[in-house]
Length: 222
Image (tube, rainbow, N blue to C red; front, side):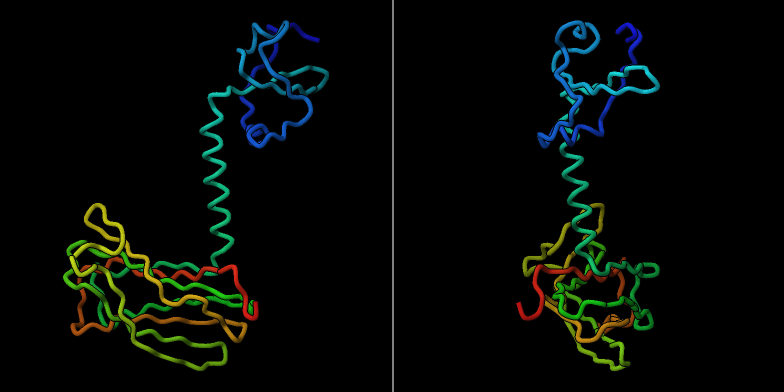
């Protein structure tokens, strides 16, 4: 075994998750004891691995643990959210002026007709937008070619003029429910088209519109 002075010391951050969850693999031991004390400060954890006949000690500091746990938590939440989203697409409004000609088409494919979904329309608009709400015309084209339409109003501000979303840097973002527990009777491609349905053709202050379809924990018949 080589002298400890020649041992390679590296940060072994991958195994932090195993330590954080209490699932330490074999080969770990508490540093700071015996002849290893000079090389590894007390409070570190080490891994013993043999590579080409040379014994390498890898360690990480306990000071790294809180940050790593936070990163793992964020990563797991991101993965979980992505798995629950059937569709998400953002459409930019040219020059921030939404005209009658600027129809927004959102195309997505459905394979599970038993699954229930929550559908949202997200608006990004200037904080100086003059209207409390915005009217849209919505069209849904089904896989068999059938097309339905309806009008819908979405609130951007409350009665006191406060945003229904979050504002920063002169922009507001509003996450509006379109329909909850929606389902699709047929598998195949669907197209949802959004048109602004206000009284004036050129609607200034709308920066982007997004359609988000999220899976719920429910299915039809359960």
